[in-house]
Image 1 (cartoon, one colour):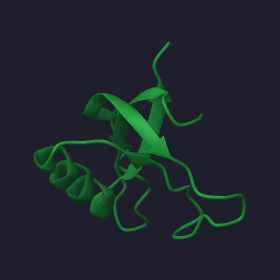
Image 2: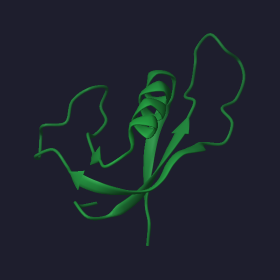
Image 3: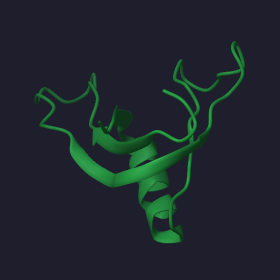
Image 4: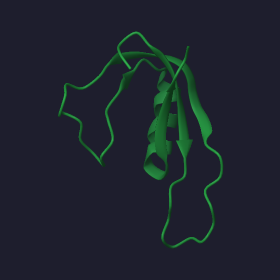
Length: 79
């Protein structure tokens, strides 16, 4: 993954110790967005994930933030 790549962002609900249901399939949150930057080696933080800076519209940013609060976000690189 590097700046200039185009990616899709998926959201999948994670394991919840209080719910006995299985997680469903991931849903696409945003598609075909360009990667602007990646953190320097060792600068990732948060909950064990990596930071990836994407160019998105304001509405897409709100969608990503909302999903990040309740799901695990993943990216797929477009070929």
